[in-house]
Amino acid sequence: MDLLGLSGPAPDPVPEGELICSAKGCREQAAWGLLWNNPKLHTPERRKVWLACDEHREHLEQFLASRSFWKQTVAVAELDRVS
Image 1 (cartoon, one colour):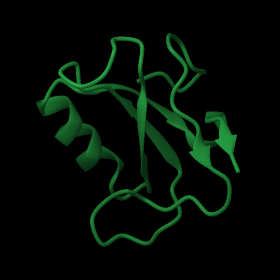
Image 2 (cartoon, rainbow, N blue to C red):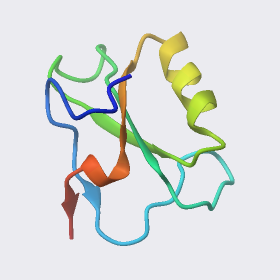
Image 3 (cartoon, one colour):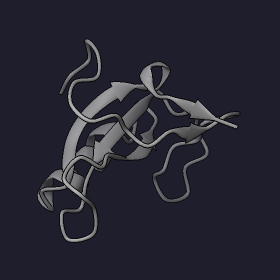
């Protein structure tokens, strides 16, 4: 996990506004961006983003890691935003 800054490819930007955890049924504010890549669907440099609250961060990281998709976790403040 890289909490000191982004290293490697830039992740996909996330929308402006409230960032909600990606865990099913969760409506909490996201604190983390989980960067991942499915090599069967994405080019090696692509970084998709799931958002996670503190409670679901570890669970979502484990889900992605078990499929060899997880690349790194960063604070949401480090993610690019788009309107």
